[in-house]
Image: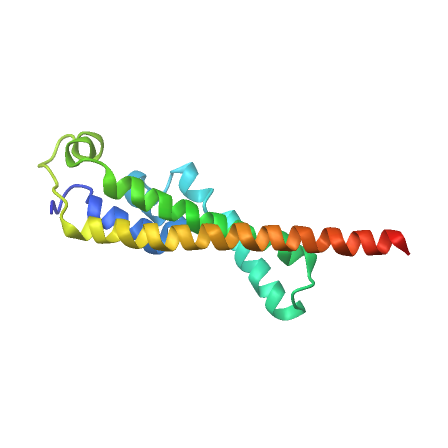
Length: 148
């Protein structure tokens, strides 16, 4: 691993663990990265939706709308971990370590990609199922209210 350059393994794990907060982007591009800051609003809104559902129960419609944002943020960060982890070392070094010595990745990046694949697929499927269930439940409730 290159102590002065950007590590592909570290970036993969940062995206895996803290990607929904944009920390991997800040590591690679600095605190001025606009895309890194754009990771925060959907993550925080989704977390607020989870908090609302815990407080007000499953019938809170605002929570229904906000929780999928958290799921999509986590799934997007898992995709970022997969993309970073599967980038060839030559391409990685050309993009993030052009002036320094080459950084080589090992099994750490592979394990990060495997974890991101498992967690990302699970979260994405759960988000789609949750959103679909809540949408169709709301349609049934609306249809019952119209028939009264």
